[in-house]
Image (cartoon, rainbow, N blue to C red):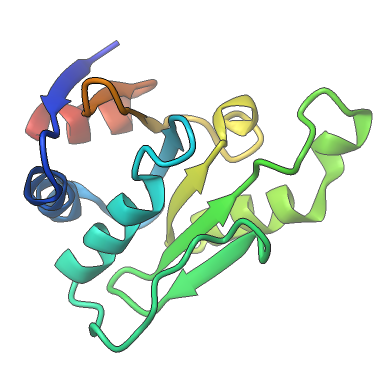
Length: 155
């Protein structure tokens, strides 16, 4: 596995990482974001969207209650939160949300999925894992396959 550790001492550092990620991403990429509440998962996605040229008038919010938000970036970016899905449930493998996300990835959208670790295979595998920590603030970035390895090595 390819790995990177990036200190994020302030919001500016997070925005710089988001800019670097936005330059490396490609249609169909999968980013899985983990970390405790308040670690900056949605802030990071917002920063990626801005780096991809999304107008500041468009609100980038947590999809905790809507489950999925899509943004008109190039390529289109889908931001999902799977916190409320139970990966241990037998129904998880047929959940329509997971099916729709995997399909959107196949159609060339970039997926940023919070709490998506248990669902990587169902989302098509080969993901870039970004674990955000609070103390100290940092991002541990891991690649799980050849496609994601290329992206992480280029950061």
